[in-house]
Amino acid sequence: MAVWDDVVGQDRVTEQLAAAARDADAIVAADSAAGAAAEAPLGEPAPAGRTGASQMTHAWLFTGPPGSGRSTAARAFAAALQCVSPDRAVFDSPNPTQERGAPGCGFCDGCHTTLVGTHADVEIVRTDLLSIGVKETRDLVRRASLSPAGGRWQVIVLEDADRLTEGAGNVLLKAVEEPAPRTVWLLCAPSIEDLLPTIRSRCRHLTLRTPPVSAVADVLVRRDGIEPEAAARAARATQGHIGRARRLATDERARARRAAVLKLPLRIDDIGGCLKAAQELIDAAGEDAKQVAEEVDAKETEELRAALGAAAGTGGRLPRGTAGAMKELQDKQKRRSTRTQRDSLDLALIDLTGFYRDVLAVQVGASVPLANDEVRDNIQRIAASSTPERTLRRIEAVIACRGALDRNVAPLLAVEAMTAALRAG
Image (cartoon, rainbow, N blue to C red):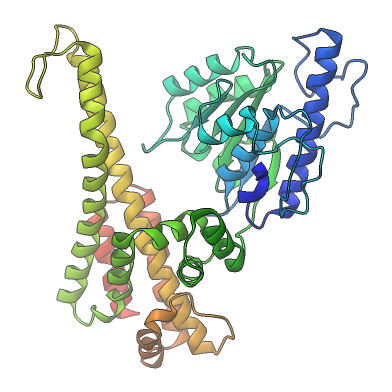
């Protein structure tokens, strides 16, 4: 398949990226023919033989709502930049923007290793932590200054650019202002406001949209082998969020947690019910964090102990002077646990917002499909016992809770305040 096939519902963006990849390929070919391995950075006057109207540039910013496929589009573009297929064959790609002769075949070594994350000249950066600091960003900048080992492009895909601290953003700014000749930065963030103005002004901005529910269901069936009915149900429930739809369709625990969240509006008839529901939401998020820790932390710890030369066995002594490295790993794991808990809680709040969105749709008689059709009876029950104005206030209460969590308010206090507001309406 072509690398663009998994970029769902983004035809305009895909067309722009495919055009840029073609121009990037022409730049590589021209440089190779001229024997010039090192040229002026992109964005400066083009040397002889290049067109000044090139669609290629050294820094890109992908923005769009969660689940729109920002990182998927960035990875596909990175693969197209590294495509080494001699004939650029596209085979039977369903994407109308992919033309025969364009980079991004999906089959060559450059495409394949980029998509699976093993290409020597493509660095995929994602984080499970609350932020990306100065130290990590300096390491990236040093990596970006290297010449590509394969002779094409050095590509840095920063999937969580919105988590850069202010200091890290200033470090990145220098690299974006003065790029190496064959380095391309691909930054992903929910909105353009999530990056420093000085950074975003030096990037070409691409806005992705929430893909249609039908397109998400189709990719789940085609790529993941999910039954059409289950794929359609998951895509509808997540309102086009590709990652969440896949998880919902494949993970029984995710479905169980979501079902529990959708019962919450029926369990807050008194203050005791509000407090109990809040505690259960927090406990479920903590269980998610514990599950991730069990899967990842023990392996990381054992690998570090082996690298440091610790004595065999879990209780084996560490060599002198290595305790600091172990403490650094433990701090990282603790921050990751906090982030996992907050992300899990945020997903629950998104599901709750979707429930009240359906309630509002029923109350105003909107002719839109319900995202949570499996609990239609509960939705109609809440709709009949309330008013559109109270439903809007409840939606605002959920949004306010998400904002409080972003400001580092204690999760239990934020959720208790939300459930009390949901009861009051």
